Image (spheres, rainbow, N blue to C red):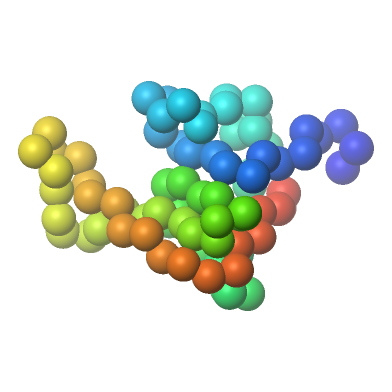
Length: 79
C-alpha cells in the first residue's frame, strides 16, 4: 500500500473537472457513504461530507446524466 498515493480530499471521475487526477484511477478506488460502499460515485469531497451520483433518468441540456448530491460521512479507500 505504500506505493499508492494518498487519496485527495476532493476527487472527480470527469476529465473536464478541475478535481480530476488520472494518477488515482490507476488503482481501484472505493467510496463509502455512511458506512455503505457506493459503486456509482462520480465525485466526492470528504471534508464537506458529500458525494455526487448520476441520476438514472434526468439529463442536462447536453444529454449528460444530472448529478445528485448525497450528504453524510464520506470515506475513500483503495480496494
